[in-house]
Structure formats: C-alpha cells, structure tokens
Amino acid sequence: MRVSLNTILYYSLLTLPVSFKIQFYEGVYLYPQELIIAFILVLYFVSDFRQIFLLPKFISPYLYYFLSIVLIILCTLISFSNYVDIAGLFKTLKYLLYIVAILFVSRNHFNGFINSFNKIAFYSILITLIIYAVKWYSFPGTTVEYFYLSTWDVNYVPSGLSNLNFDLSTLSFSRSAGNHGVYGSYLVLIYLLNLHLLLSNKKRAGGKFNILLVILVVLNLSLLTSRESLLIFLIVNLCYFSKDLLKLKIKKIYLYFILLLAIFLAVILVNDVNIGLINKIKYTLQSLTDSGREQNINLRFNVWILILLSFVLYPSHLIIGYGYNALNFNYFLKETNKFFSLYKNYASVPESFFFIMLAYGGIFALLSILLFFISLLIRLYKLRRHSSLYELFFYFSIGLFITNNTGGSLMSDLLLAQFSLFYIFIHKHYEQQSKYVVHNSKG
Image 1 (cartoon, one colour):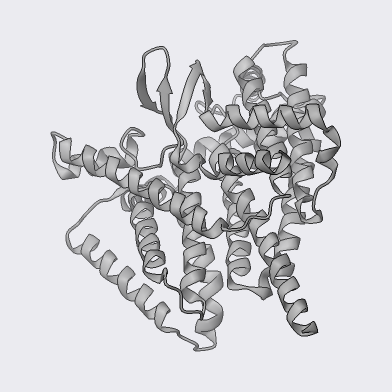
Image 2 (image 1 turned 90 degrees about the horizontal axis):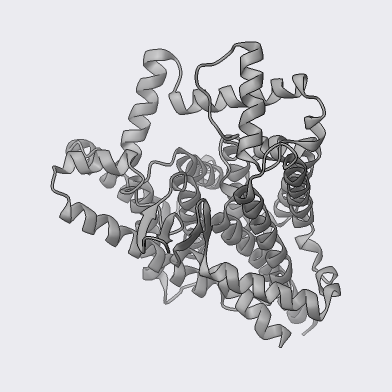
C-alpha cells in the first residue's frame, strides 16, 4: 500500500509539466495533481506520522527549505492582525505541501526516471510549440506583429502549461504572468540531461530522440523572453565545455552543436527575425545604453532598497517578516517609501527568492534558505567528478542560485518539483552505481 501511494505521489510531481491549473477562487490556482498529493499525505500522516523521519541523508538540505516555509506560514498568520490574505496563506501552505511530498518521494527507487522525464518533457515542449504555431497561423496581423506580441504579451509567449489556468466560473482558459523564467529553467534541465546522454561514450538506441529534445529545447528557449534561463543555459555550457576547450579536447558533438547554433543564429540575423529572446536582449541593451538602467531591473532594485529600509523603521519585522500577505507587505513598503521620499515606482513583490524569504519570513527564513542552497551545493560538488550528469546539474544549481537573486523560480510548483526530482534521482543513481562497482570488485 505504501509503495503504491509513493508511486502515485512520484508521478503526480513528475507529470506537472503537461498539466494546466484550475482556478477555484480569485488568485487561487491548483494543479489537479495537488489534490491527489494532499490526499496521499493526509493518508500517510494518519496511518504513520513517523514515516517522515525515515528519510535518506542526501535529502537533508530540504529540511532547511521546510523550515523556511514553516517560518513564512507563522509570519503570515501573525500578519493577519493587520490584514487578512487568505490567498497568500494558501500559496504558502501549497509550498509546504510540495516540500513534504518531496521528502516522502526521496525514499522511492526512481527506476526508469530518465525515460519518464524525457517523455513528459517531449510532450510538454511539443504542446507548447503547437499552441504557439496555431496562434501564429491564426493571427490576423503580420509576422513582425506576432513576434512582438510573443515577446511582451503573456498570452502569446510559449511558456509551457503551468501558467495556463482554467476558470471554473467562466469555463474558459487564461494565462498568468511571470512564468517564462520558471519554464525556461525547466527547459535547461531537459537540455542538460540529454546533453549528458549524447556526450556519454555508450552507444544508445535513443540518441536521435535526445538530439531532437536538445533541438526542441533550444528552439523553445529562443522563443522565450527569459533572461534568467538564458543565463543558466550559458553558465551550464561555459562551465562544462570550457575545461575541454582549454585543454584543446574538442569532441565531434561539440562541433555539431556549434555548427547548428551558428546556422540558427545566421538565419535569424540574415532574415531579421525578431523572435522573443532576441527582442528582449535588444530591449535590455538599448535601455542600458539610453538611460544606464532597465525598467524591470530598476523596479526590482527599488523594492529591495525599500525592504531593507523598512527594517530600519520597523525593526521587529526583521524577525517576524511581513508574511506572505500582499496587503500587509505593500502597506509597510508604502509607509517606508513615504517616510524616505524615494521612488515613484517600485515592484509590488520582492522579485527575488532571497528577498521573498527575508520580507515574508524574516531573517531566520533567509538564513534557513541560504543553508538549503549551501548544503545542497556542497553535496553536488562532491558528486560532480563521478559523472558528466552530476557535473552539469551542479552548474545548473549554481546558475539557479545566481538567477534567483533577481527572481523566484525555485519558489514555483513546476520548477521546485522537477528540480527536486532531478536532485533525488542523481543521488539514487550514484548509490546504484556505487553498489554496482562494489559488487563487481568483489566478484
């Protein structure tokens, strides 16, 4: 019974990329799988609460993540003395649900993970690109106008299904903003797995499928407007390939990849195709050249300054935070801005994984999430030399740490689940390989 429940829990997390959300209440969105996850966890806790303590050692970093979310929940409840935000509390409880589910799933064997992960990834990208192509085909305007919309309008950006919401009250679909970085980071995760499979010396029957996935990832990334995912993509590739290039060890797969990328860029530049990512980069460079700043970055910087200054005026909130409570958070930011007379405009949310922890959960939530990253990176650093997959994922985690300073992608259902499953799989894979080596050496 427990094994079957854990399997259901595992697949509920794994299939998120091919699912849309259902809007039950204004600002409250749920994957269908989340109802299943909640039900299974209730069964676990009712049957035997002690199971939560029977966890593998490698999952210990997630206990810090668990603590940070618990602290935010407590701070949110405290904030209700000023303003009540049920949607904020619900979202925080949902994050806790995911962390607890990840802790339980860490006990699974993860047999067949690569095939399952890649199949779901393929369908996720395929559905995304088909929707993009159909909208393009049916668009009444010019191609230039469509590419402009697919850069700036959330309804046209090919950012997966996790921001596709079905409203029960109107029985219609809509898109929510802020998902392109999350989906883009997930694409890089797909890329590094299939890059590893292509770089491995073993001849694999599925090599063509891996090449197809890499091509689809690069195509989808180029259509996105995510600077976060581009940065992670560059970090993974530069960190991994630079070692061999410096030693003048150039494999055929490197040359094929560089050639395909060069052809792709040449076609874009020659035909002046202003696809999403190119448009976003041009906009960023032009903004920095014209005014020395970029509006989105400037708004984020402003809110970070206000958060820090708010603790000067309200020092107790450095401990108790403002909770995951939009009304409470914005009230104190507005008062701080009024007191110091600083900005006309600033972001209404922290726009940083670490400032989210600091603002919503206080200094201890921030310290806890820093310990999560530090302990996780230390474990991955020790594993990196055993496999190109481990090494690529280590670079990916560094990239995620860097980009989450200006975003909160790891505090999202899709990426949190996929990143965590990948982290668990790597450790399971290492344990299996170690046992195999020991067994052969004894034999």
